[in-house]
Image (tube, rainbow, N blue to C red; front, side, top):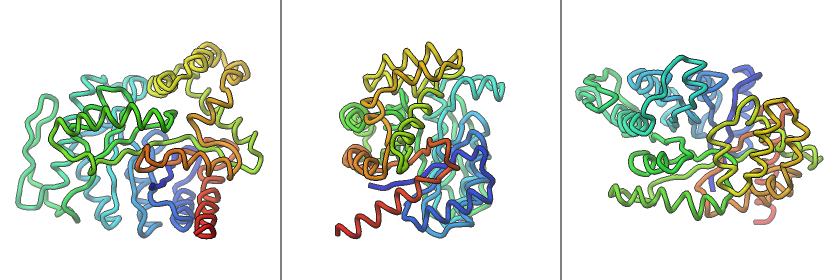
Amino acid sequence: MKVGLQFAGGGTTLAEIAMLSQEAETAGFDSLYLTEAWRSCFVGLAAIAVATSHVRLGSCVLNAYAQSPWITGMSAIDLDELSGGRLLLGVGTGNKHINEVWQGIPQDRPLKKMAEIVTLLQQISRTSVGDSVKFDGDMHRMDWPPAVQPVRKSIPVYLGAFFPKMLSVAGKVADGLILGSLMTPDYVKNVVRPHVEKSIIESGRDPAAFEVMALPFVSVGEDGESARRAAREAICRLYGPMPSPYLDYALRENGFSKAADAAAKYMPYGDMDRAMEAMTDELIDAVTIAGTPAHCQERIATFEGAVDGLIFVNVNYSSDETVGVVPLFRDLIARGAKNG
């Protein structure tokens, strides 16, 4: 099972992200990702590309409403060249608050939007100099002759998805799925994967060529209770001042509606303590990787067979970005070598 690491970028300089990327590559992470929220994806990923030599680099995820497919496609080709062919292009819709409040962009027809933009970005990355990208969809049109030769035959385009209809879109057109957080391994194995694989097969594609990635919240420390408290706080913060629609859905789908109800009730008023009372040990063990290094190792193992890879999301807010997560994985490698 592949294990990657996501950078949020907030409160961390690009120089620090580059330094942490080198440490993560040395520690054994197979991939590094940057989310497009507090920083732009392509600039930060360029810094990571220059600082590293072999890890896969990914946008996790790029907001499909924020820029045109033309700019996105050209930027992806440039970054793939800069990194020596290491880019994974993860795209998603963002959410209505980001698109309509932060950007003033209507979030129109997301299913059609994502089906078209994934297909178009794939086509852009596969078009050689001398040919033209020709696309005529309901939301996007393009007739463009590229002037830069891609460094490889194709850049993989993954779709960030939670809801069933968007999962079907991923299975129909994307090269892989970036699933998100707060889902149990059993839910992914028994609900998500069969749903996506049905769409893949109906589209005449091979399920074995499709990769499913999950982004578990990770909080690790020698003081296991402090680490687990950080995970509880992270879930509660998803509800203040308003619920994250995707992650609220994930929590409810995985059997924790009471916790979701409590967070939705108390967090808009800033009552973290009351909200955290509903974040039980059962919940934390089910949907996060939180606690001592040994406990976290046990939790990581439960994802074997459910996903093709994990992308760690550090939620220990007493730590800067990867502090705690890089040592955890270094320890995993050391233990594996010792046991082998």
